[in-house]
Length: 253
Image 1 (cartoon, one colour):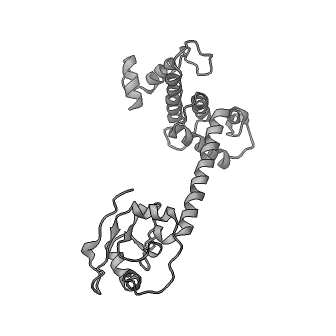
Image 2: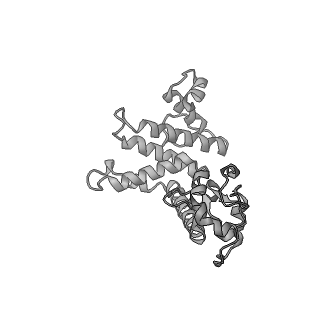
């Protein structure tokens, strides 16, 4: 799609080469060499997007037809264009994926031998803007994992189906359905299906009907707000049997 859209301007529909020539011109460079100084002043946003597109194009050319062999020079050109885009303030998902790919190659490929064929060579490590963006995203990702693990530790049952032997877990509380009975918020189980809720009804029934005298876990505002975002499943609180017709789908993701 990227190639056909831009290559139409040059009359070479579907041509990767034609599209990349156009992107280089859009970046203000008419020499055909990404390492040549810029000759034409262009708006910052357009230039950044052009370098990002060039990075994607070079990455496409870095894998040979066998789908295995990597052309390290093409990968470097992709990284150099990505570095220019990052330097202009544009960090796209594809650029972050490229940084992770190069880092993986660096870990997997031996560091000895000809520097031209090493991903830890200075020409890669000196791409300051690319690695700053990559490391910043890594820190954000680790912070997100830590935050989620803290939430799960507070109330693990909200992220795991309570039915014995099920084992299904959700990345968000809204991925499961929470019991809609009269049980306290801190003791409400979550389920992946009405079958699992019915299977667990014998165990949960005393809590749901208010017959259990067990202490209620501490509740915090975060638990309350998360539960409110999920539609409930409701057992038959009046009788002794679970009514599967009262099982409703989750509303929010």
